[in-house]
Image (cartoon, rainbow, N blue to C red; front, side, top):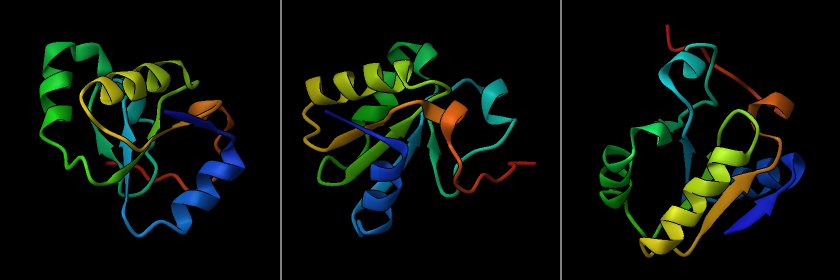
Length: 105
């Protein structure tokens, strides 16, 4: 797992053709907006979250975020334990995000 600053995360993501963006916030938080093309798996769903993560392609590079960076850090650690080699945590999460956000509505 690697913690990346907002700038590092956005730049690396922009240049990564094997990237998957992963939002681990709650449904209520996601309702306020989501980074474009992100997959949403709520980390608070416990085993259901782990089951969803296990179904993902381990050869991809995962850019993980939450509201502040804490839950996404935990998600990256879980992903490492499940055999994912490339998980990048967005430091500061959505609180500090200045990039594009879309509404799911």
